[in-house]
Image (cartoon, rainbow, N blue to C red; front, side, top):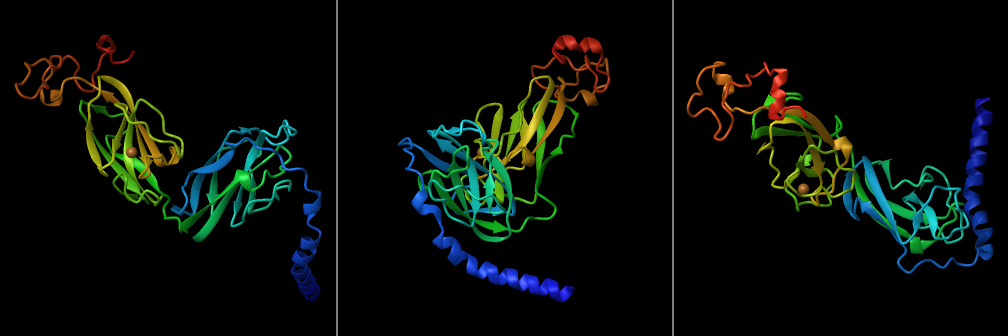
Length: 314
Ligand SMILES: [Cu+2]
């Protein structure tokens, strides 16, 4: 029995060796349909990572097309201004008019996706983005692009970002002292090692959401960059509940997505130093923050429902 299996394997291996020559001779180049006229600006590109980036084995690739419409496979197949993306790992573009194969190294995004998670073995790899129509027929090299990436082994445990302080749900005073934690990635100032996707810097998003992978982190009073690779900061916040989202982004400020973010809620109370002041006592000079309401009106931990009129809740 075992011998039979070995013989079969050998026979298959022998077949496999002769196959490329055969398939070359019967390649359907002669019956390729007339070349589709594509819009002049039609092009595909990887948004993230960029050519010659370094990435961990598990990474997210983000891609896009210009002057064509992304449509799920099987829909509007005759419309040659539409199609969907494919990624070919360690292979080149698919000739125009040829169906894109479907296997481990030819990945179809037939739902119209613009990003994917990839898992690659360490070493150098190429990624070719290939656009094809609703029947998976390639638009050829004009709608393809190839980048190379250097894949390094995944760290253990997996990368993560987190707030060292404050704790989720903490009652805090403004300016809120925050400390950032990072594991499995290297903290690097913005603008440095921009193609090394194992590095990055922190951002805090106030009352917002994590930023999708490959998107630029906005820069304004609610999207604070720590481009000097800071690990802590003081953030002024108005009284009430706020969310703080810590978001890691690469040296180009392009986010690593929700997976490398962490969100906490803090409850900002007025009256710095109130903890040191007995409720009802006079304000101790120097302990109260300038301009705040008299300490003692909202003792820590005893916030009465009526405190809502100060804007705590709604
Ligand atoms: Cu940034």
